[in-house]
Length: 278
Image (cartoon, rainbow, N blue to C red; front, side, top):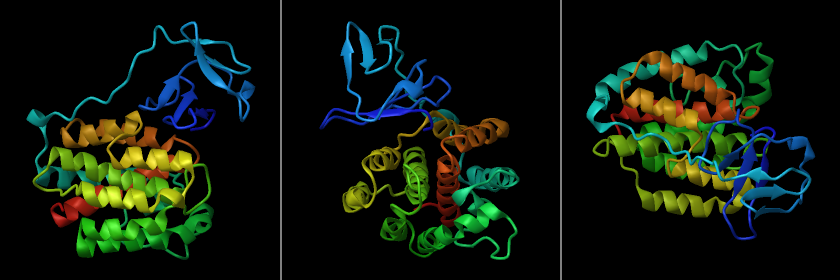
């Protein structure tokens, strides 16, 4: 998140303080403050019902509202074939965007297919080195199902620059989609919590602490609000414009993180519906 302050106790959970324009998240405290006044290493504490960060006025917590994503409605759940029909249309609409970055260039392509190597898009050329491991992951998923995904995903962890590397975001978006679709369609998707636990243990030291915490959240189905909104609108069969609007909101997260997350989500969904689940 841009203009956010990340903090935790020595062994406590990671949290961040961000502006009200940022998307809600279970780790986020959204409040009006001046991020430029915060410095690395500042202490943060609660005092008199306020959150106090060195150099900032106290932020009152008494009126805080806890956010949680709305549940996916099982009584209005879209059947599997209808979901498969809606997904390509959404991906094609997203792929029309002129501001795609990072893994966003994979959106709209068949799983495992690389963008054109002779493209004149300077952003695509800048990021093309990170595409092959993602395409290998999707190819493994096509061939072996989710077992192939778990085996190939570690190659992407830590790949790319940024506070949350692009590979972390792509894998996180993919695992987020698998987890939530698996909850909605348990007969179609094997969520395999044992493989998830083994994967997260394996990659713990492959990236930084902040990105690892966010990756774990995504793998367990916890993300920023627009990611939940997109999947809820798809799975509940809501008006197609809602999913597209949520997709655009996701792309506004960070510099390339939003595009990487969205590409992972849509790739995971395409992989699931292409194989009929599992």
